[in-house]
Image (cartoon, rainbow, N blue to C red; front, side):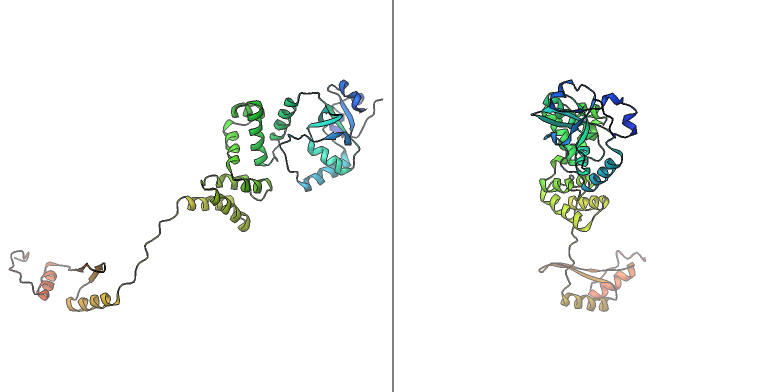
Length: 299
């Protein structure tokens, strides 16, 4: 009954030929940890899969590789409702479907639904190409359904608690911005910069600007800083009344010194500069002020 299939040299070197066989639903109870070939149309994706979007181009690349070399790593599935639900390996299953395969290698694990969900979440968050929002949602699901703390999640997937916390902050973004991250229109770096803003409308507006102007993360951070701390508007210098300007010019000529007139509509002040005691006395004489000489420093 045993049949060797094209899994690729890597997996064949690790698993004996007798481990490979075709199975139908009735064989599932005897599956254990052996690798079987299962009809692809009996497999369905996991509804609790955190990954919601699969890159079409990368799937096509994987499908081409599968056509050439076969599937190098079996899918992990669970028997359910006259079929099998994927625990790990949905991307390989999708690519195998694109490649036209009729059967795929699987390991069958008859696990409780709760364990299936946990395994699916952990398997996906360990992948480097998981979208940041999908990753954050997966952490949230692990906390909600399994009462795991951020620290416990970090231990299970090999990340620090701070990294988990930082990623989960992305769930505070407006739905519109979260969707742009999911669609890869903005990066997680852009999204984290937007989180510094408190106003959701500002987040959405700046998100649109990032996309329209192709802003870098650094440029986005600068924009956020300006929005949070706008520069104080300089008071516009009002143009001086032409009459006041003419009076200033006349006084400058009369006193031969710098003159400044400032104030509001009904009151103000006139400033005349002097550069020595002698210069001061000269100006006072022009003003008609009679100095008795008691403060004359020249004596």
